[in-house]
Length: 279
Ligand code: NAD
Image (cartoon, rainbow, N blue to C red; front, top):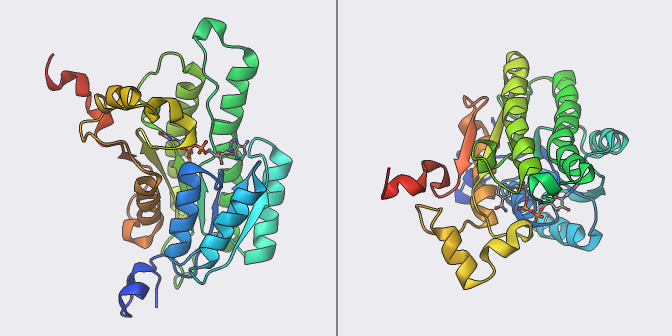
């Protein structure tokens, strides 16, 4: 039986990633954590990458194991080539292969452009863009080595890049972050074009405003949240689960013909909400 919807009971039919092996970077917090758990719930074995906060990562592992699948935590800084190479080698040893990469790890180091240090610029580009590239490269090598296994998935492998609405919305005071996510868009599309012929699907999810530690100041007071809601036509701040659900379906065979696309999960933030009453 191929992965995806089967003829079993309702629970089985929801395990759309049954038998697949996934790695989620930055999976001990926020969106990565929710995604790792959701992939496990969908039937995948999951590697929970983290760079600091082992206890949080182990708690995510426990929650995933509760779905009857395998999981373990792996410490690695995604911006360090040797650590990324080691993480994928270890995964192949432990799980035999990889079917799904969710390149999620990311951070912000905000400053006005004229005050931004080279360290702030480099740190964000190193983690948000170079880190995604290194992980995508290592995942793609294993996808190419193994090829398609039809009873697991129609694709030879799936990569989901965690981008942001700021891959297309300029963001004053965050030039490093916006540049990194703009880079993710073109990296994702280029990888999708290059690897598509080998059966590898590369796509991105672009969250809008999601309630996580990365943007706490934007939603933690009622005033801040009210300001934020003006930017969201759907008038609610997103939850990590909104993104986790989107990633899970995008990585599954339900979306097998989706290649090189960004799925915006943003409550309409990219709809130029300022034009709702003007223009
Ligand atoms: P978060 O701070 O809760 O999670 C980020 C995770 O990345 C953490 O686990 C952190 O430890 C990890 N990380 C940071 N540097 C790392 C490194 N060098 N190696 C490995 N892991 C590292 O924030 P989040 O909101 O869950 O962010 C997850 C992703 O979603 C990021 O790529 C972020 O840019 C993107 N995103 C978030 C929002 C939002 O509103 N929260 C919106 C758009 C995009």
